[in-house]
Length: 521
Image (tube, rainbow, N blue to C red; front, side, top):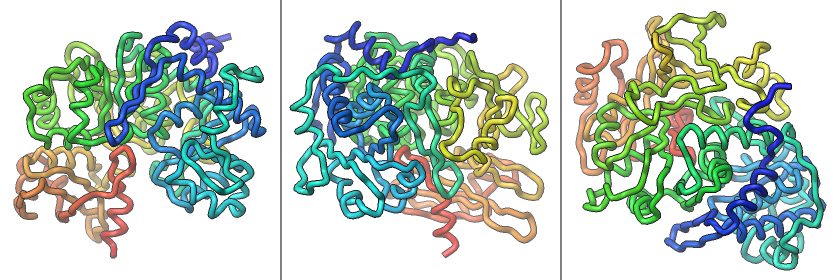
């Protein structure tokens, strides 16, 4: 038997253990868009979790049943997520912005007949109840006159705060299925075992040095890996406090950090950039942050300006939904080798391969591959998709990320871009992220996205979509000249288009596929 730090723990047992040790400690502080605040101790929240679990049992939800959660950031999401784990059922979070076509794909892919949702999304399921073949529709809060709708808040009030039925849950069983779109048309369901969930939580605690007295503030969406594995589960594993922000607001976020005495938070490049646009405040360096857990690209100028202004370090990292946690992170102390995303963490190995699967020497660019343990440190595969799973994890246990990067002579990983973000031009591989970082280092450019467009001579040409800071004026020629001074000639954009805004995912990533499609029209 090979032991790991999870042992036999599950999300159920970890939650129960933490509640028993830290029952009177604040678990959750929820901040709504209207700045209304709700706080719960571990014990208070556990009572709600157990009541919800009893409701689910009464409705016939059983072990390993798949249940969709279509909710935005709210305490009810965490209540349902933990309650389903208590009875061994499987959570399938759905993006809060999804409409019927997107919801239909996930529900049919997973043969889901039970959905938990909120008032703003309820009509999707009442209008398509029969078509989706639903048999249980649960509304977390509010009221509905539809007889098919069960009102969770009302039914919880009638339930005991102790679990009515003890269900045995094992670490290798599925806990969550997280759908991630990647570069494919339809999202793929990443399977998370209970071991995966707890491994990610324990691992991230160790990675950033989280302790019981810490406060983690996050605005990441609850249906995303960044919320579940980088915030909620680590907090539960440490017995710390989670501050959940309903939605990110650039003009309020840093004040929330300071007022709530957060010791940790997580950001992405778009969050950092929008914060930098806010007026400088005399109090903004008076915070308690130890560092900011960070992913996605910033230029060196942007990174240094942010750290100087807010007096805090950014911990650059690399990971993906399929790796459960960040497989690299720069050290808490000392030289970070920016823009490196760190060295491989304990329990992970990284290699760089070419198009034929051959391992490349140091400083050679290629696909990033990660070695881990399926079902523990990496996912075991995709739900009902054997073909995609085989492409993801090879027979030797190497996960093929689809990302482009290189390792230097000392083992530091440098992430270049997603393979879908690599432009092949006259035989040269061009990183879109590298060009985007140059563009956003311009003081008048708010954000940028770079794509490859057809070129009859060189296969692909480089095109940049640019969003200027409000009130700024900049010409295409000025942008190209700025890039010429900072990039090799073959990387310089040949075309520049100005946009008022970018289509984005909930975590701030630009939807380049939509940009390309719109550009064709």
